[in-house]
Image 1 (cartoon, helix red, strand yellow):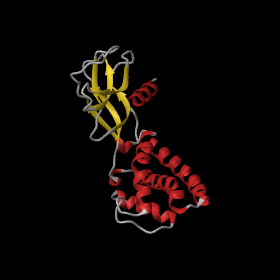
Image 2 (cartoon, one colour):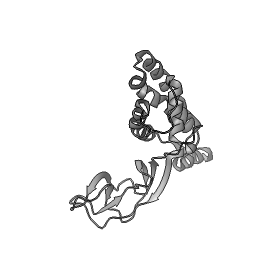
Image 3 (cartoon, rainbow, N blue to C red):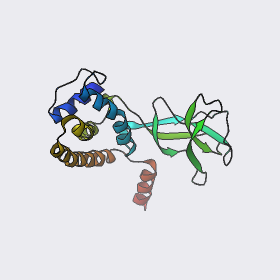
Image 4 (cartoon, rainbow, N blue to C red):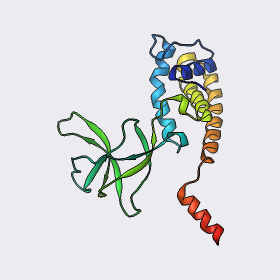
Length: 199
């Protein structure tokens, strides 16, 4: 398992048959390519699945500013770590909510916010987990292959390698998501199963 972003990048470079780097910010073409792709690729990978290791909970702070129309309150989504995807809220099924961007009137700050009429708001969310030591090993492996696939042509100019990595990456994501999905049982599912067992 890699322990930091440089080690992740060097695992990518092993797959690409290239030399290692000392950091993502070093002055080489391969480091610049990986540095440019790293965070967007990570955010996309985290956002597209309900990863156990990336779940977090938060009680949101209500902003003093209010929506222009339609709702009574705004709540700022977490920024440290960044909220990439809201999974659930404490709101009832008949309580609507929406995610938007709020920019202050003096244009000095902008936030992603949830708009709602609720007077308190709790969420479960997918966070931007940047430390590879917290990643599931199967996620780490799939992410290395995904990053290699995206960087392969820029670094190697080898279209055959890109195609080979595409197939390997798809299989690794499938396995990682499948195993991850077997490692928890939601309360709603648990209650439903218990009710069935009683019957």
